[in-house]
Image (cartoon, rainbow, N blue to C red; front, side, top):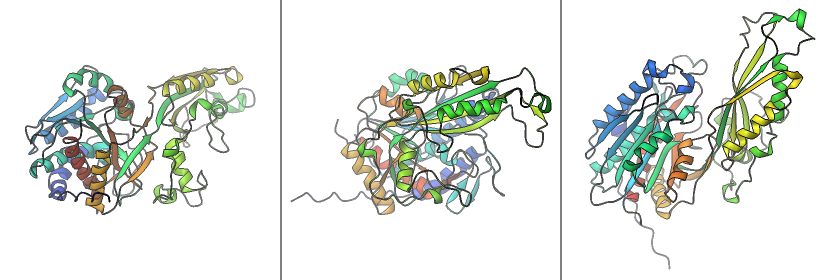
Length: 472
């Protein structure tokens, strides 16, 4: 005979009120700040937007009714700021929980629909539109709201540290030094909770089981010292675009989209293969044009490709005039920015060496080829979840949605988790988030799904409380 299941915890009162009355006004102010990540704003330090966003969040944190809350912006010369909010243990609990988020944003990227803008918060029903609302401005608010709800209910909890960085969208180049400087203060946490991930649907909570790595680089192909008349040079001087296309063919089969380099592939563990058909349809998730044929033969396969398949995207290009300004000129140079998503278990440094070697070997037609890679970001595979983590997260999903949580391998990259896995071996790392169907992080019309944000707040509270009473 098995023991009866433990009764569900008493509901946390006030989560909707806290979000509506206290979080949303501040989150909307944050949305107005054009705090682009340094990779997209070379003058970020002089512009002061990252500092302004960090100060805004710090003031909000410091004003919350949380036991002995302290909030400060940690800065170093030439480095992006980091917000640190800390509150001590309560009620005889023990341990330390670290909660991660980021405040830097992607650029607007294209035209937003009528009535919306990247830095204009707009509420439509359950959605708050604006750049950074779901990725990842909501995270600091959800983390502190979770702590606030626990304190208001008199539920004992461990020490909580909320770390909000400002360079995640640039690959987190400043985070390692911040973590090193704060190491004595952080100690060895009992739980790390990352709120920068996604969900396949808005009807349950979702645990992230893996994240892909990312390799960002620029490839430049130069054929002339200056542009010349295409009537004179056409058919004699090879075009830089055609030679660039040849280089890309070394990385990717242009007919199928399959990545060619074996160093960019990995075996998928059996535990990470989708089982039953997921409650997710790619056609409903992405704003595809009518008639577009998607890669993959089923949504189950597409989920696997998204989580464990390498993929190449050209995300930017220089040296190419607009259609309106394009004259009859054979251009001297074409430069492309590439984003290569890597399977979670692929070493990003090794992948970078393989890609650079393939692109620079034997330049086509003897052209000048230059490759510059940004800091490679290795992916992350979640360790087996501790029973208390699974129980707390499952209880929160039942509490909010009346159904068990789901699991997913996420296609994006969070460098923080790979760093923390190496720095704190054995510490449970939990990633979850709000980025679901249509939320369009990094693209136009990004939105935060407010009921999911409230659900993640409840999940954070339950995980924090459980960490304070978990076995040592």
